[in-house]
Image (cartoon, rainbow, N blue to C red; front, side):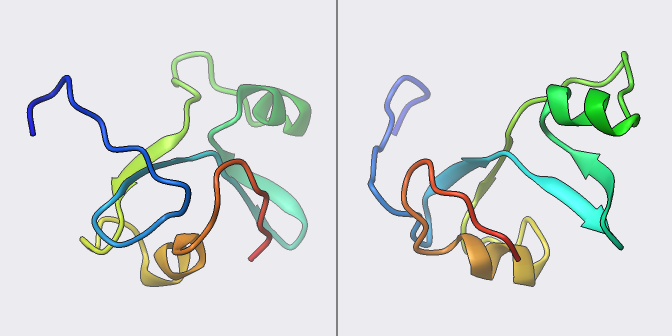
Length: 82
């Protein structure tokens, strides 16, 4: 597959590249996020950072296992808390 080809799927399966927005909260406080508005509202905004969805290939171990496990099988645009 060359860089101009894309595979579209309705669910997140092993081998598929996914783009995920996230908000990391610890003890109810936002510590990290890929969403600029959330960062500003939480007081953690950094003007030098790019706020955009995180991209990774499922099943390649590019993110922590628990995060990947919860992404598997998700459909386009749902929200999930884990």
